Length: 259
Image 1 (cartoon, one colour):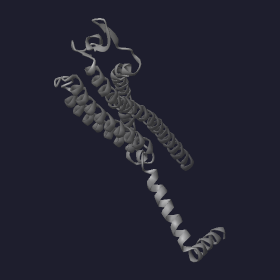
Image 2 (cartoon, rainbow, N blue to C red):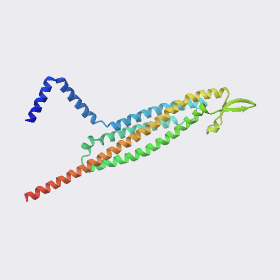
Image 3 (cartoon, rainbow, N blue to C red):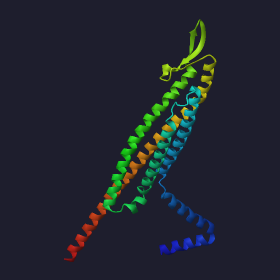
Image 4 (tube, one colour):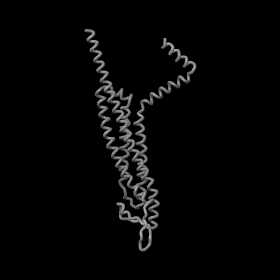
C-alpha cells in the first residue's frame, strides 16, 4: 500500500510538474558523473600545470634578460635545455599521478580492484607513488631555495648602498665578483642602467620562485590524495575479507542444518 502511494505521488508530480521532474533527473545524473571525477587529483594537476607555466615563462625571460644585463651570451647557457626536460618530465609525472588517482578513488577502485590480489597491487602502487612524490617534493623545495638566491641578490638593489669613493669622488659601483659572478663592475651611468634592468629582472625570478612553490604544493596535494586512496583501498580489502568470512560462516551453518 505504501509503495502504491509512492508510485502515485511520483506519477502525479511528473504530470503536474514535468520540468521539475526532469531537472531532478538531470541533476542526479550530473552528480553521478561528478562523483566519478577525482577532484583532489584534478585540483593538484591544475596547480601543477599553473606552476609549470609560470616557471617556464619566468626562467626563460629571466635568463635572457640576465644575459642582456651582463652582456654575456654564454651566461646560463644550459637553462633552456634543462627547463625543457624538467617541464616535460613533470607534466608526464603529473598526468600519471592523475590517472592513478582516478582509478584508485571510489567508486572506480571498487570495480577495478575487486579481488584481493588486485587490491594488494593497487596498494603497492600507491605506496610507491607516495614515496616518489615525497622525494620529488623535497627536490622542488630545494629548487625553490635555489631560486630564492637571485631574488635576494636583486633585492639588494632596493636596500643596499653601493656608494664607493674613487679618486676622491663618491660614485655608485657594483663589483659582481663579490657575488660569485665574473670579474665585472658597473659604475656611474653603467650602474644606473644595471640597477634599472635589475629591478625589472627581479619580477621574472619572483614569478619563477612562486611557480616552484606551487609545484611543491601540488606534490603535497598529491600525497594527501594518495594517502586517502590508500586508506580506502585498505578498508575495501578488509570489508571484502569480512564479507568472505561471513559467507563461509553462513555456508557452514547451512551445511550443519542440512546434516
